[in-house]
Length: 294
Figure 1 (cartoon, one colour):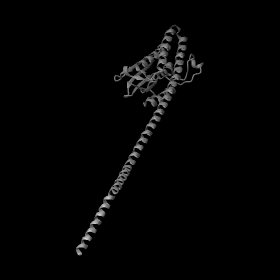
Figure 2 (cartoon, rainbow, N blue to C red; figure 1 turned 180 degrees about the vertical axis):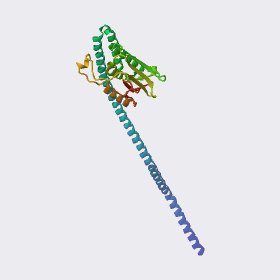
Figure 3 (tube, helix red, strand yellow; figure 1 turned 135 degrees about the horizontal axis):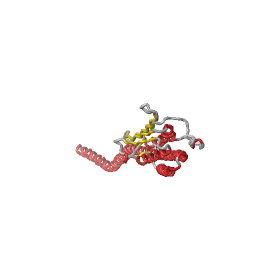
């Protein structure tokens, strides 16, 4: 009896365990699927949490790059516009200077024709050569130094003819200056030589002299010193055309405007100073700093 009861109890326990095992076996696929889904969701959330900063950082980099490129474009466009305006202003100043220079040369011809008509043809030939150089160089940003020097020699010789060789001149170069390789802005030197002749030597009579010295100042600038022994006077010759032709004196102001624009365009330090001679003699000493290119 007892054995039968124990058998029945054991059989019941076995049945319960079997049923529980069957139930566990039947529910295990669903549980595994749920676990897999939970793991997938966790992986997706982790990927999203990792990708969000990456996407934000990438978007920020793209935005910064785009903005920088856009600002660079507008700055470049603005710089080109300013450069075009400055170059246009420089050409306009050159165009203004050419009539000023031509008027003074014609004034010299007018004066010379009244004093020595026999050599008027020689004067006109030299004048035409000078005008050709002026017109050709006015369209250029830089010209060879020697071309500019030769043009100024031509101009000085014209003035020597007008003043009956009452003055002499000398042009020198320092040993450290490679004159064959240097280019300078055109029409910067002539107005100062013109000023020395017309407002100094023109009134000094015989024995006048102009000395011009070119030397290297630094890697971007050369120095031109123009020294004369003339004397200043406010009087004008009766043959001066400015008595009968209204003219605005624009030489020095145009030179200063040109120098300002040249410095702005090229980041240079061109300038000029008009001084009294240091040796106590009458006359002026002009120190002109000119930017150059090799």
